[in-house]
Image (cartoon, rainbow, N blue to C red; front, side, top):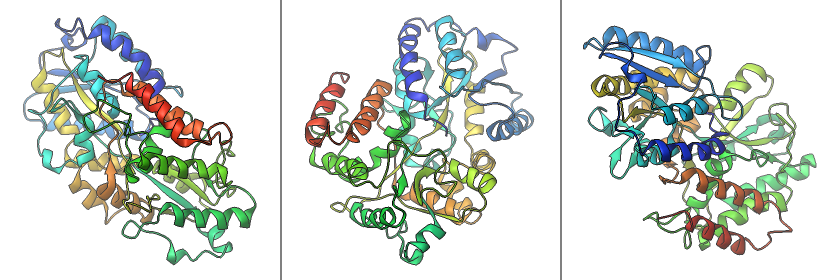
Length: 433
């Protein structure tokens, strides 16, 4: 789920993708190792991590129970803080035609990999597709075919410090739920109350994280307001990113700084240490709270929504499995992907790594087992999740949207939100077909 530093590296990868896509008719050297029933999987985390521990057991279970004599081997290639490491190795493999049979990728980059001929369609290998969340199918589909299978989901909510809100006179019982969410205006009233009480910003929304977070976490406001990054055909941003809905969303975003409700330079771990009463973040923060900051009693609220549409929208997307287009062991690779994306394996990864599931049945199963905080994100994801756009040049387009969020916080320089969005829409237009 930790995708915040992905986009910059993904842009670098595109040049390799374009080159590798021209020469992928030969056999995959990495795939040739071992017998014809042995497949290799690359993953972007360490074996010692929570994900790695789940994967280690999953591979043992696959090798023991697949019933066809297939053997899977996994290579753990941790990403660095800047997104390197794993992507560096994938980049090198693309240029030398040495990709593994199966590899993980950040879901929104599926289209770029598929367009370049790096990964193959997996429709024929994935079973029980009707059980997949729509956002997972949307994320993994390019040109009408399923190219990647997300093994987990993600989501963002408004985390709140119960004591700080109560001390500010806020009735906890009156706070929004997924069934009864709040509008931008209602949240602004809460922000104003808390900002006045504590004489400091009420909420850390991650404006200082200049990465995929800004695309991932803030586009739900655009969608809620009736805007979009590109139009439905994916051919134009003009008329979508700069329409009235998008203007409303970015006016709300800018207002967080304009009104002093948030900050572009938040204190590190400010919510976790009781500096800020609110934080916009995801389930990964629950791990921190429950292990390192147990003195903070916290809850989770759904995201704000447009007062005009009254439509709650939440972000989705995480890492996914893809099959190398050059593997000579498609049946074995497909069987591995299907196994790792099965209900039990999705459940094990969700529990082991504190992430949201990619399957409806797993979401229903977990609803009775998880904490009240996680339950909010589960319910919000299942009912309101929206995949990021499937675009061949997604990394570059994401960077433009990220810049738009950042520049909107420069209130004096960009007081005219409409003009800013018109400019950014034209930049995106230049990247579209």
